[in-house]
Amino acid sequence: MKEADVIIIGASAAGLMCAIEAGKRGRKVVVLDHANKAGKKILMSGGGRCNFTNYDVSAENYISHNPHFCKSALSRFTQWDFLAMVQRHQIAYHEREHGQLFCDNSAKDIVNMLLSECGLAGVSIHLDTHIDKIEKISKHRFRVNSSYSDYQCRSLVIATGGLSIPTMGASPFGYKVAEQFGIKVWPVCAGLVPFTLHDRDKQRFASLSGIAVDATVSCNGQTFRENILFTHRGLSGPAILQISSYWQAGNEILIDLLPDLDLEGELKQAQLQQPNSKLRTCLTQHLPKRLILRLLDPDLADMPLQRISHQQFQHIARQFHDWSIKPNGTEGYRTAEVTLGGVDCDALSSKTMECLQVPGLYFIGEVLDVTGWLGGYNFQWAWSSAWCAGQYV
Image 1: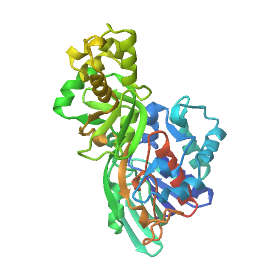
Image 2: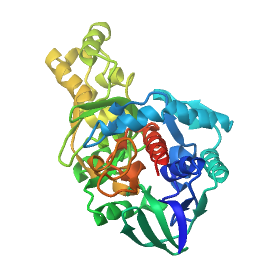
Image 3: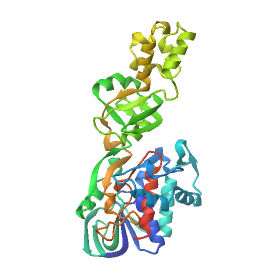
Image 4: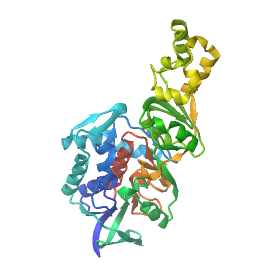
């Protein structure tokens, strides 16, 4: 039986950050993970460039049954604090749209930074290690039986993430630990995930696969404006991924394909100036021809503007500004970037991430019921929640 002050289960973003902070405080820290590499999800994120944070972070960028829970951690370890670490390690990075920050070179730069900091803090990391059993043996003591060794520790941190991308080793382990200790777990589902369409719509739009359009997408009181992407199975792209976290089965989504245009007014003006022009000729100035012919009747699309009534213009404008479609479902955890739901935040201290009813047990990162938008927000939650726990474990 080996002794440690802190056992952290999970060697990815949250787990490594917590290990660094605990190690800096002189704690004897051991990180255990069943994967063969540390930070596997970091390595594949952002197309291999890792969207590690965002210039503009607030509680409004997160979804939780307790929307106030994330405020404390986000305010105490901010995007600027993580950026200072990145700059200290001289990692080149750049900003993309909406304040998203990516590595110039590779996500490996972030993983190497974290592992370097772990080394400086004296953290022990053991990979290819499976957890066989966890038990609380006294008020301030846990026993962890693993394939590497058996440990006793005072603080046990669960940083095992959610169910998204099972090929990266995602599992319900963290939720099972919570349930073992009587902690509520909110139902989970895939978030930031593409939609699939019903067969009729899939057949109608499959030929548009690969087309991307700037659009606004709305559902359940939320609206996002970015690209949508037609796929052979349905709809994807940043705006779709964002709205998917607010969508529920059976909901329709509303898409404005021309958010900067008053299409009805444009058509009336074109009718005066170019009465012999075909409707589709006017529309192809703004949208791909293939998309137009999927949303309009072909005979109407080929009709000269002078033969179309103002009432028809109104109807046509609605088809493009208020295109309503009901997804069949989502692509699920296979392609989801995050997991919605998870360990109930009300069971934890927002200051320390420690369970209120189980002293010494901590949950951090994606395993909690805190889900960020697309754009570096989930990584920032990992850094912030982990930093907070690291000050107290």
